[in-house]
Image 1 (tube, rainbow, N blue to C red):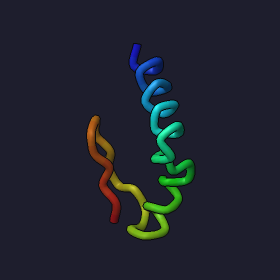
Image 2 (spheres, rainbow, N blue to C red):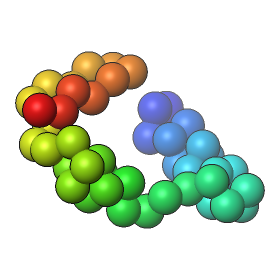
Image 3 (cartoon, rainbow, N blue to C red):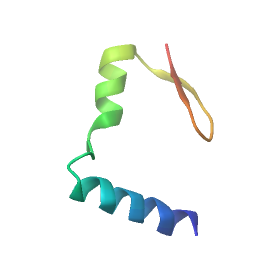
Length: 45
């Protein structure tokens, strides 16, 4: 179920031009390595 919901959210965001395909790379470049991740958050150095 979660995978289907994730796919639907991504499709919607892409259709609205809100999806950034390389967002993880942008975050690492801006903030450093990811040191933790939870259900709703990611923590960078």
